[in-house]
Length: 553
Image (tube, rainbow, N blue to C red; front, side, top):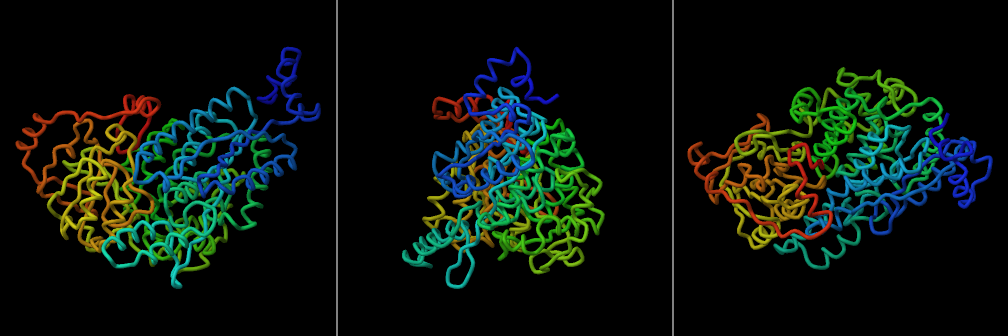
């Protein structure tokens, strides 16, 4: 019996059938599996502008394999467009909105299977969370990454523009050079071209077994992406027939594989928000300390932008995620007996998938570093942890101590950086930007880009209870927990305090004696928030803050 039979079969389903006939269904279609296609197509997000083509290809694949494709929408925010203003407060909360609304649609209309078509930062994890909750046969096919831009024979991306703003502010480049940069950085549709959050999550979807090989890396503008979408449409029918559900694929060991690949690729620190939230929906607890344990064993094999000069299109040509998995398997660092949506094991998927370009994917014996691309730090400044993209930190900044420059919000910090009030050796502290304090946990790409563009990337660190874009590079330490809004130690930092950062040892310390910290704690008062009505206000009241991310109660 099919799940959709409850609205298609028997006398009691006559009212529902009448509405399906209103949609143009035929009697033959009433006998076939009903496949929901969750399309995130919209005309404001570059990564989603092309999803109508993916949607049509998936529909063809479903129909070719004997199913009935039915499209319904999911929202998506462009973090780049939302960056640096009030709109960024709404970005992270859309993850929950996407999961909730998709769950509602799929339960109200009992589909037999789902094909998820996401592409960007919160859209991918939101749909993975929905798939885990619903636990009906599901497969993902993303819209794919955009191609890198080119300026003066050098490849560039969205993050290049962010840093160029600061370079223009300091007089390093002209207004005309900034204008040319902004026009050339994002030359095609697709998710931004580096190993930013969207591409990180699309690659990790592949590792979790929920996307076909190539899902994370085939460029948006390639015809190969259309073929992948057709195959995903056909493959969902096989998953439905065999009754393979997300819980069969997204197992605890699959999440460990995802963390290993995360470390090898040097993914966005936002993966440390999203993987635990997805695992939570699967009934699996992910402790962030797992990241350090895995990082100690897994080498960093890729330096993709912003950490290096390679882009996701290069990763695709070098062999993609199968080649990375194949290389990690040589070291015995992944489980290869796990089932994937191909209906084959990881071992079968990666057989013979050797590296095709060793300048993009380093061999295991010659990694960029012997440890992984992300580190979780703890100490009296972040008792519950904080996260840094280690692979994007200059060698001289892995250990750093400096005087705190404290700002209660992103705008004040950005103003100080642009005005030249931040000096080499400083530690910029931006607080009250956490899930509750923001509210919404804004990304801090603009301040880090301003630091890099001002030539301070090898001498200034930044710490925040907000989060960082996958496009961030430098000694940017985010997700500090507990956050300032709930009285976390970051709320007690004062101008000029000495802060010590030791990334190799996973430590972050506020060098103030315990008695003084207690005195400051006794004087601390909650900061009043000016909250708008609606969902964001409800979110701020109910959110649980932690280094694992924002999860609604």
